[in-house]
Amino acid sequence: MSKQGKAIIVIFFLTAALLFLGPRFWPNRTESEMSQAGRVNIIDYTSHTLRQAEKLSDEPGLIEKGLPVAGITSHHLPTAENFIHAFYAKLSKLRPNLKYFLIVGPDHFERCQGLVTTTKKDFLTPFGILENSPDGVRLFEKSGVGVNNDCFANEHSVGVQTAFIKKYFPDAKVNAIIFSSAASSVLPEQLANEFYENFPEAMVVGSIDFSHYQTVKKANFIDSRTEVQIRNLEASSLTLEQLDSPASLRFVLAWGGFQKAQATIVSHANSYDFSGIPDNTTGYFNVIYTK
Image 1 (cartoon, helix red, strand yellow):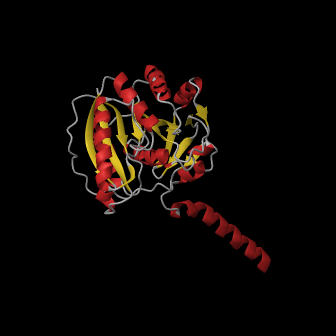
Image 2: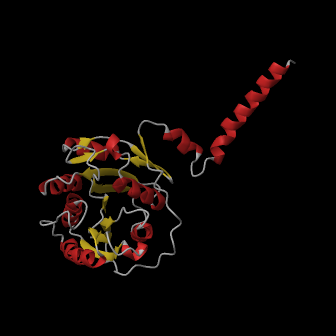
Image 3: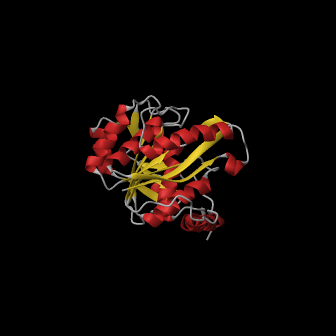
């Protein structure tokens, strides 16, 4: 056999070996994930990698007896990672068989160019594919919610939650809607009402961060006022000084009201508690509503 022929055979076998073995050396990706990552209906959130959670003690704030129907937690990675872990760890103990989530959060960059927007795409997380529920999308479209897949690509208010949901509830499906800061006070309640009438079994997660850009002292003062509204399901006077998405919290509070749920402030924290930086802080709440 000629040298050229031998070279062709060597190249063939090397190529075959790379194709066969390559996926096994791609960190954090299974072969199935790799094959699906190229699908057109996937939003890739694998950049939201999570560390191994530190030991999580039972948080203060005993949960009232009942079924968790809604919650609030942060999307402030990496600073609040263990805080968010604590929320999902507690939720998984209280309602371990959850199959359906609705994520509501801010359109941080106002890229969707609509008051409220959803996506039809599934979500690729570090733990695998988290499927979008087409039934929820159809309801939102019927309700006038815009569909814009592109603006969800780097939206961390959704991406952070998809990673935790897939980690703690691997068989669940989700929908996600994000609100513009210009959304009216009436719109979230109307959508919550329509969604409740069709999907009362859903677990609503408000992906919300609270007081921004303040000193610890000022942030805690602002958050104390917000805490009263969270407990009382009172959304009428929420402002952007208090949180990054008043419309998202209005949706959660309306949902809690329809469910006749009671709020438990599982924990409140500030970015200072994790970073040690006392200025330009962000406030966090972990809240679970039970009925």
